[in-house]
Length: 358
Image (cartoon, rainbow, N blue to C red; front, top):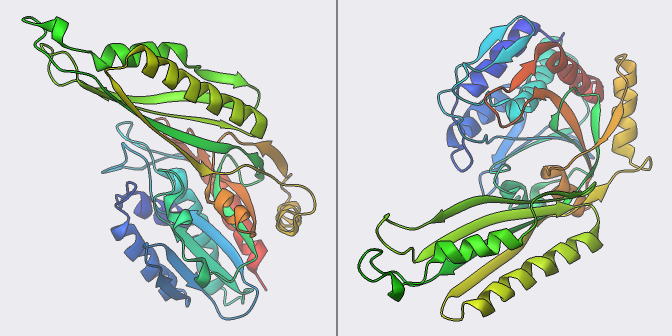
């Protein structure tokens, strides 16, 4: 039986373990030990992703990621009626520790009740938040699953991600010429001024219903009395429309070249990478049918919702695994106002139990 108090305790224990992207050692050790105690065979691939498997062929993958965004250190969870919140100085870490909790609680429940389950493969990845890096480095030679349920969506577990965009990230390094700002500024070439002109020419925000563009980070300069020599820009754009992506990419390159030609003494170096690819799920997905059936048996109404974000599901689907992303009871992801709904988290655990109980 899904136990509310045990579920809350598991979630609070998980969020108290610091696991910012790239620093997942402690959480991976904790999870590995929990999964071993539940009778699963646990291993880690060369990148540090955790893979736990029960006996049997054709397993169902249950997936979540181990890392959290900042500020996510020394999280102090607080239970407030039917919510779990942070103390307001950090995120809560429900993304994705609510997903981890749902999986663990369902396995705890079946183990306690001595109920057998179908073959499963629990895949817990590193560095999801920094561009699905763990999933992209996952050793798929160790993976047997053809179907996967990914617990990494916002909202209740009945909220199913119907589609996700292609994500393109870019880095631009601008190098000008430093000089003393008060003595001989005319000998300098300000990288900040060049960056400002470039930024002013780029789009920003929502471009259409399926497309967004964002410049998220600017770093540059050294001291206030020197003409800035270097500036680094980081941004992204994403869309479900590949023609629009090509158009935006061409606009970005054209703008960089335009500014480069305007400042021949400066150096502009750009790096443009595709971090994950778009997908759309249709009714032909056997995983989707399995999830909908499970939700309906619990009295929950499945809803399909388009996402502007990416998850490990993007990577799995690109490699031929029928992965479907569901909600995990988290709300206000990546903010200090984040909270987890306890009833929704119990529903997520119930779904896991329903999907895998023999």
